[in-house]
Length: 80
Image (cartoon, rainbow, N blue to C red; front, side, top):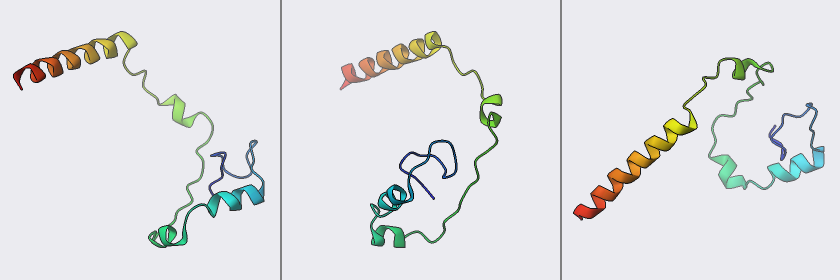
């Protein structure tokens, strides 16, 4: 059951049952009627997601990519 805290009930950060119900009732009945399937997905063991995470790009690499994209966009706008 979703909670306002974003945590599964029974974890360290818990919402009261009343708060959880109030959170669920914020969704309208007609909206909920459009869902044909509802799944509860268990939480993975702690650390399992982070141990396979890639390091990603460095900030300098991302900055260079953003600058290149901005330059391309500027050139495109000059042609219009």
